[in-house]
Image 1 (cartoon, rainbow, N blue to C red):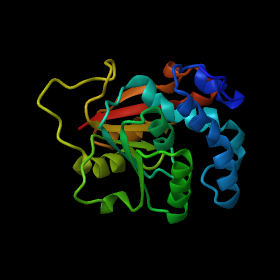
Image 2 (cartoon, one colour):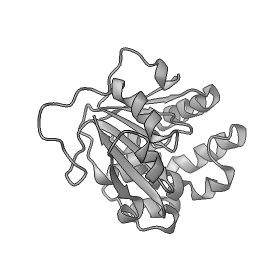
Image 3 (tube, rainbow, N blue to C red):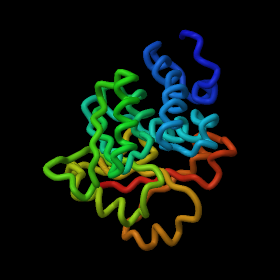
Length: 222
């Protein structure tokens, strides 16, 4: 494997076997986000030097617990600066990602970053998720966008019907179709009010880093 940029050490602590192209793409993220963030604030400016840990690695917690097979379609709801969609699109180059956000200036940055990285498996759209019609996805993903109740209300009509086989759980190599979201803090009341019974994984069980204390991955099957 080619020597990676120093900033990628936190990523390579947990993942190996990236192709040279993937290493180049991950390595390019810092300069791309730093440049665009000076024009349009898509992530907190105080976090830019922690981009690889707080944003890229956090997004890749999804990749650490499930394997998306080639041809899978995934909708990133409220992608903001492109998280978790952009890091996952690099990780899964044969999976199709649809990155949607209602804020035009943010989605324009995400579009420019995807093009600069040569991500042919990314489609961006300036749209509210409630306005998406006539499309169905294998999964919806989201990172700290809205309460679980809303995420599930938006996701449910957009998810493909699950085949009539035993549901796949997070303890296996692949989730069944559903919603996968990244959240933080005390989620008891939010989950109680959502009408769902998600599987919950602590991010520190995946990546034992101080930055991920009280951060969780939630999975709701379709």
